[in-house]
Amino acid sequence: MIPLYDDNPTQRSAVLVYVLIAANVLIFLHESMLGQSPVGTAPRCLGRNSQAVFAFPSREAVTLLSSQFLHANFWHLLGNMWFLWIFGNNVEDKLGRIQFLGFYLICGAIAALTQSVFSPSSAVPLIGASGAIAGVMGAYIVRFPRAEIVTLIPIFIILTTVRIPALFFLGIWIAGQTIYAAMSNPGQPGVAYLAHISGFVAGIVLFKIFGERSDYS
Image (cartoon, rainbow, N blue to C red; front, side, top):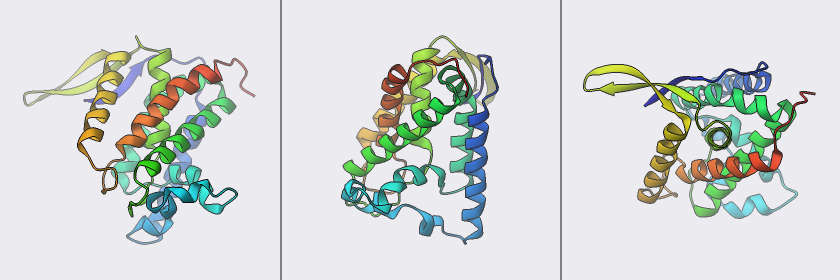
């Protein structure tokens, strides 16, 4: 299933979502100019030793935030930014811009920290905005469970669009992440499923803690 857009208009323009997308794209372009392998810019301490992030104050702790703006390749970036564009605008609309930024970064940090704790000896760099965006999706399922997601699905060899309630779409997504996490080794290269799950749960909890705000200062 590929989400195309949600039928859920906002009251105000999602400025922070646009800023985050632009920042991720610009940083990815910078990564690309550094050479074929972006690993040199990745937060290797998160990928190799979870204990490093607890050594406050330390430069390694900053990677809990900086890792959220690094992506392995174009498709990694595109997938993350697509989901942020679909689900982020409504969450920003409800939280307000300043609170949304804090919410986004905290969800991403929790996701990265969780993944690193469960794979402390991994030599695989942990990068990407997936954990933060999973948090946005967690907030979305709490606030807009009945919103319709226009989704592209294959029926035999034909692609068609259907309207799926967010509760169902995101429920399938998190169920899939949980199944894949149970089947995978968190220390091996691949998708950071534990980061997705923990980010999603953090989003549900933090959205209730942050609450909805009407000011956009």
